[in-house]
Image 1 (cartoon, rainbow, N blue to C red):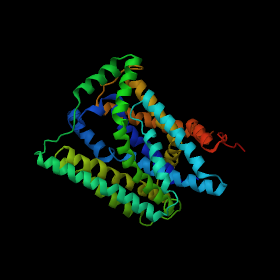
Image 2 (cartoon, helix red, strand yellow):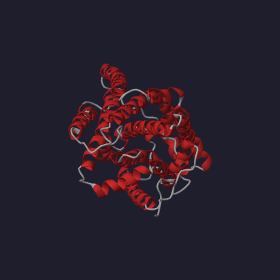
Image 3 (cartoon, one colour):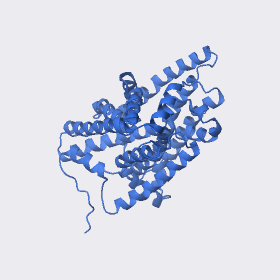
Image 4 (cartoon, rainbow, N blue to C red):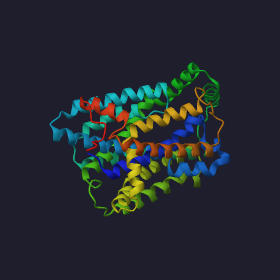
Length: 381
């Protein structure tokens, strides 16, 4: 089952993901304090930080939760065993995520999504209300506790708990990705992957992502986004968006230290993410952006393929396996590259969808999930 506003939201999410990921494609983002690293372009990083950073991986997580419910309902309708279908779906995602993270770009999120799906799938039979309550509490309580503790630690240190900077990591990244051979790039990529996906980190990631999956599942079961009703959608958007941005402004009015950043990133960011589906649903159902929405929906239908293509193209452009532009472009240039790449992808997605129903990776994923070859070409009759 496809829901138009969800496809549109997924298409928008790909732009947000790329705007963040491109900073890792062309700079040692994993090892720097971005507030000082791009000090000369602080105005631009601030805009990205407020409106994009920390918001689009939760948004994709919400959408994964939606997809899980749609998959469950399809299995029920067709008399399939959900567990076996779901396991095949997650196993394929985990394998692709590992290959993507280890051999293309270390910032992969697919592997973590697959593991998170195992946990969130245990809640699939719960009704909407319990899912929203459990997901909401799972999201807010740990983040408020962690944010409060980090705030207190920051205050007790006189605000000196700044963002960590790894000078050695910065130098190694530049040497490998800008100047290194394929083997040296691969070694650095594996180091970065371990830093982002170590055993403790991956458990933390799963704990962070599960509530977003559950909230997405709960929202899917409310049927709010499946019909034409938009009552209250804009109200929810403005509430969540306003509160989220207000929280994300905290470091800008206090200090750019770990305490304010924790609240900014892990509470403000997701609240902005939660607001986006409500805005998109309202605009789509009111018919205000039909042509744009249709174009973005086609991008969303190819999200798996397009996400992987972004990494392939981004690393080829900036790593020494291709043009070797790593650490040689400004934040503005990198951002403009991301916007240009996304625009080309939207055009390509719409051309592709004229003749095909699904993308290449979506085709393989669906074949593995259901154990049969799906129809790829559109029926010309």
